[in-house]
Length: 85
Image (cartoon, rainbow, N blue to C red; front, side, top):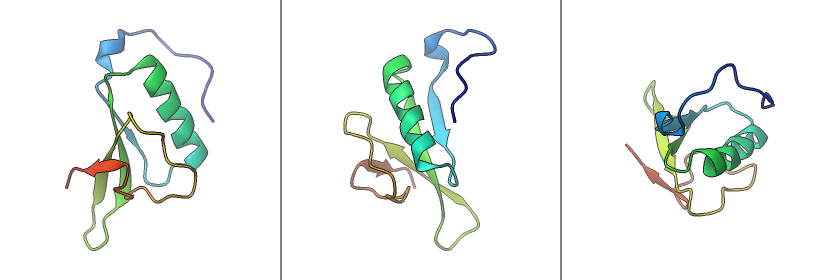
């Protein structure tokens, strides 16, 4: 659930990247992507997912020009993103 307040204000251009966690709820991901599209349109958004064979996280960039995927799609679905690995 998103909190309805900020602790302090900062310039919009300070937000350059947002990484959505591997275990984050789909609803929270969708809410944050909508907020980022609206308030921080120049920020890059990445989805973290567990790497298949290494002890590592894999980041997949979200294409904000396309609709965010509906809940239930895995974070590494490259149909709508660009892999950074």
